[in-house]
Image 1 (tube, rainbow, N blue to C red):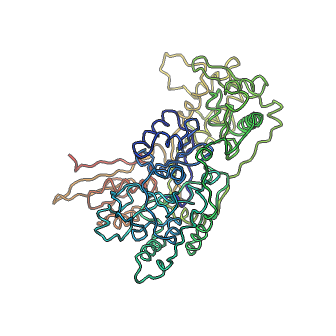
Image 2: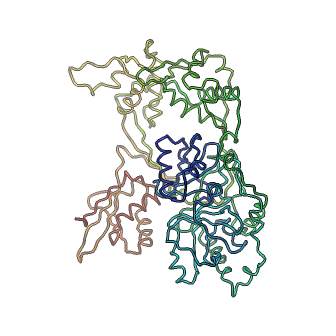
Length: 614
């Protein structure tokens, strides 16, 4: 799961309620964990962050520390510990002990574990059910090196004994030195000698291929990695850049050199040291800043935000929004910025100090009990002398990922709402010199109307958050929308101006798939899925409207024929433009899921109707 890089959709701190919910889920999932163990893994005074990845995986980490748990589906039901958590609390999960050191090379390389590679204790194989979470470790060392995902086990202990302890035991999802491990700052590692006892005195376990069960285990796993790199589930992984400044390009293994790379990884583990539990999770040990350094960093991040992300049209802005959406993203990578460690101690006092210096203007909202940013003095000496940093996105060279993205590009779908100036707003566009024949996004249209406001100087002097309506702007926003006899408004709040202006334009949609793009007027038509019964009580599923999303009917029919192993036909819709794909069988749910997963069609654009259900 964590072999390939995937970007995080969001990265934020957990609230108090979410922290309590996470702790309850962990205690329910892992009955072995005690309150003291849980406090060691998730310190009560430390900030806990959550990174939501694009493959629905959620990663929970100690801010400035290490990832401790991950949720494979983001629903809170399948939470598992990372190797960092298992190194701190080894008894968190039951473990399988490897039989030989050569097996560990393949496990660290991400291969699944076979039953012949497991040491069976004298009292017999421990009892387990299919789908239970287990860890993997080497003999003589308490540091587990791999974690298995629930649902990956193909058999229980009784079924394994019945099969003669042959076949796949664990499907590995997270392991030492994968990208989730690399995402931590500092790379906590287990004690020295982690692999000194791994290379056993019997290397013939892997050499005698004609009579060795272990050879069969490793061989099958290796072949499975080459022939089926994707496995049964997604092999995407956490983007290293979400947690640390520099990624490790050495993690990209060439297809023909996996054994050599695994050997190098195994050799490099000889110098590993186990950190003390307290120091491994203390964010202060990761980066120590003095009060003066924090003050200086706060000023630098504020100036960077004022130059790059804070726009005058967004004002007034709540102080909490300024902090979370603008100031914090401007901090250097790997640095924890805490207002409590500054001399100001509180966000409101810091903003008021900046207001006293003349850089910004703030006022306290008595209703919300929060400081609001009302204006920015862009002629201030500090603002003028500051040069904002140009942050470039580093492009890591990963040929395998790039080639996979190129293959998927033909199926990647983007749907964007755009707007065309109507007769109501043409006068506004003409006044600022904008082309009334072009199509604009909502943000571009909003910029146009604010440009007109700035040109005509329509901001109310006594309240900067209100715009005074002149004749042209009032007609553009309200002519024809106000009932006769009703008085036209004379002013409008800035936060309502953009949405009202956009609602007066003609909506369009642009649909892009790969290099192909099409513009549709009005609302985008949905894909229709219908299941009904035919003669002989047979079900048939109909699909129409796929042309709006640049999906070829013939190609889709051929693909569905192979996927569902059934006959498919393509016919023209009677009396309408477009084609209809007929699929034999009641596959309406699977077909909808296929359109979402493989073609990227948003769920809101798929209408499902099953007439066979009563």
